[in-house]
Every structure is written in structure tokens, then in C-alpha cells.
Amino acid sequence: MPKQTLKLVSWNVNGYRAVMKKDFLESIRSLDADIIGLQETKLQEDQLTPAMKAIDGYDAAFSFSTVKKGYSGVAAYTRLTPKSVNHGLGMPRFDDEGRIVEMEFDAFTFFNVYFPNGQMNDDRLQYKLDFYEAFFDYTEGLRRQGRSLIITGDFNTAHNEIDLKNPGPNSTRSGFLPIERQWLDRIVGMGYVDTFRYLYPDTVKYSWWTYRFNARKNNAGWRIDYFFVSEDMIKSGWVKDAFIDNAIFGSDHCPVGLVLEF
Image 1 (tube, helix red, strand yellow):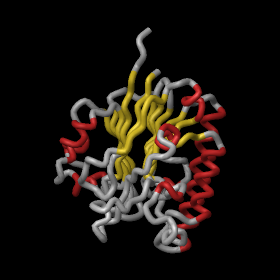
Image 2 (cartoon, rainbow, N blue to C red):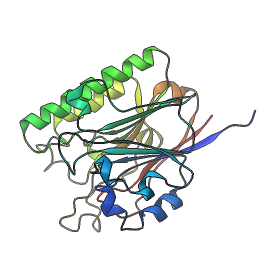
Image 3 (cartoon, rainbow, N blue to C red):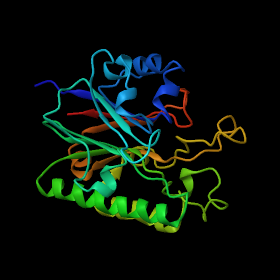
Image 4 (cartoon, helix red, strand yellow):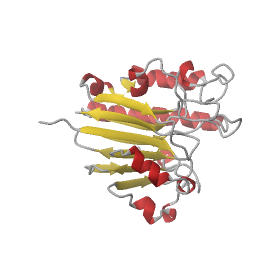
């Protein structure tokens, strides 16, 4: 039986309406992915345009923030028909910000997640840590049922010093705090694999740059966008490649991706 190859892409677009004015559809066509996760769409449902709802060849699913307009939100597009689609954890505290689309396929369950940013204040940092806890409690329940998991999105945390340009000055800033980095240590310890770092342990590449200080031009960035998979997918030999596409513009993030063969 011939093997199936799938390409998956994740991209924090930092405002879907804004990126639509910046060759977004051309970028999506060039990426040619089978499954796409977008984060920080900043949309309400009544702001969806026909072009957003129906990208040629893809089924779409969206989650929206119900607590604040122009905030958070995720979208997922797939050429494969999912068996089911879910939009949260069943916990209003976390679901009301529209941060999750979950799609179940025959071979795996795909999560597109916009993890919270903890920079605003201590309450938001605690919310971020609580979100990590609640989310991975949820995914562990699926793993106990024998599901293979793909978790992608903007984690809003750089894991190790190799994952950002200036680790020293940023060690007291949310996004690289020890308590946040420890959460990524926990995720790895639970048996989830950062596919890019697994395949490219010494490669310095970033996925986000502040709009200030010519950061992208100077490549003063952070790697905070990930594709994690449950370790059974590594053991099965399904993970063939992972990438960060620095050539695509339009947001303060660039797309990241994963190639599977099974």
C-alpha cells in the first residue's frame, strides 16, 4: 500500500483582515499544505469574508473570542475531511477567548492553538500557566485513549537559549521566564516532541520578530511557534521533516511546518 505524505503549516497571522491585504492567499498557495492552522485571527464571526470561509480545496473551522473584539481567535483549513471538529476544552474560562480548533482524523488528532501571552500582568501570566495545565490535561486524556496527537501554534514561549537571539536580557520577560520554560520541559517530559528541534538540534532559526528595532531585518527573533507530536508518531517514523519559512512575510510571525509520511 503506497504511503501518504501530508504537509501541515502553522502561522500566526496577527490579524486575518490585515494579512489578507498582503498577498496572503498567494502565500497559502505557495505553501501548498494539506492542513493549515492560523492563530491570532482577531476576528468576530460576522467579520468572516467569503474568501476567508472558502479557500479553494479546503474545509474550514474557526474559533472566536467572545470576551473581547479584535482579539485572539484561530482558524484551521484542511483538504482532508475531519471525522469531528471541536472548539475548546469544555471550560469557559479558556474557551471564551477562542484559542483552540481540534480536528480528529483517522490517523491522528490535530490541535491548532493560540496559547496565551503572559506579558500584560501577573494575572495574565497565571492564566497562561493555567491554560497550559488545562490543555495538556485534556490532551493526556486523548492519549490514554490511544490517540496520536499533533499540537501546533503559537506557544508564546521560547524553550531554550538557542530559541531566541538575546536570551540574557529576556530572562525576566514573559516568553522566556523560567516558570514558562519549565512548562515546555514538562511537555517534553510527558512525551511530546518538538519536531523542528528533534530534526535540527543545532539550527538557529526564529519564527517571530518584534516590529520594532528592525528586528526581522537583523534576525533578532524568537522561536515560539511549534509543531509538537506525541512520541508514538516519532517511533512510528511518521515525521519526515519540519521547517520554518522565513521567506514568507505579512505578519510579525512566519509560517512553520511539518511533513508526515505514513
